[in-house]
Structure formats: structure tokens, C-alpha cells
Length: 129
Ligand code: THU
Image (cartoon, rainbow, N blue to C red; front, side, top):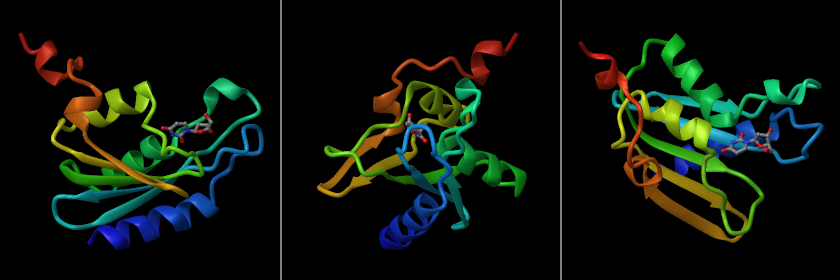
């Protein structure tokens, strides 16, 4: 249920570790089997080592054995709602580009298919012999 994903993403957003940017992001990634995995951005004093909420959620999902996903919700305070960064698009696209992506902010939401956010990914098939 979409509302459940928003709820999980909001709870994760509250736990985001973003002392440098102050930009807290929560993510909820739903696997094909229905399981929901939360992520939050985790910043670092060495700024470039920051992990985005989307990739944290994907890492939790993969560690639990999930490989196929149907929906991602991210929650931020951006208005209009912000789109996932380029690095996260590429990493998410590893598992397929049919993912439904929704960004929720204080003034509404935006939705995309991942394929529209990254139309020409470098993917597993590019490494095939
Ligand atoms: N951030 C995310 O977590 N996801 C995105 O898609 C965009 C950016 C985080 C990284 C950093 O902690 C903060 O937002 C500001 O860039």
C-alpha cells in the first residue's frame, strides 16, 4: 500500500544522519514479494563518503535477499519534491528500470518510472560476452 511506504520513509527520514547538509532523506523500497526496506541518508565528516537514503535502502534489501523491486518512495523537505541523484539512479537501475519512484515533499509528490530517470543505464547486459 502506497501510504505504508510513505509512512516507512517518513520514519526513516526522522532517523537520517545529516548534520552537515541538514537535508534529511528517508526512503522505503518495496520488493516484489511485498517486503519493505527502509533507508536514510548517512553523512560523514569526509563529505564524499555520504550514503544516500536510496542506496541505504537498497543495501538493506539486498542483504535480506531481495533482488526485484516494484516501488520506491523517498521523503524530503524539498519543494518541489526532489528527484533521486544520478548515482542512486544508476545503482537502483542495476536491478531493473521498471521501478515506480515517488518523491514526497511538504507540497505534494512527483512520480516517475526509473526508466525515465535513467533512460540509458550501463547495466549487467553490457558486461555479457
Ligand atoms: N541525498 C539523498 O539521500 N538522496 C538523494 O537522492 C539526494 C541527496 C542526501 C545526500 C546528502 O546527505 C544530502 O541528501 C544532501 O545532498
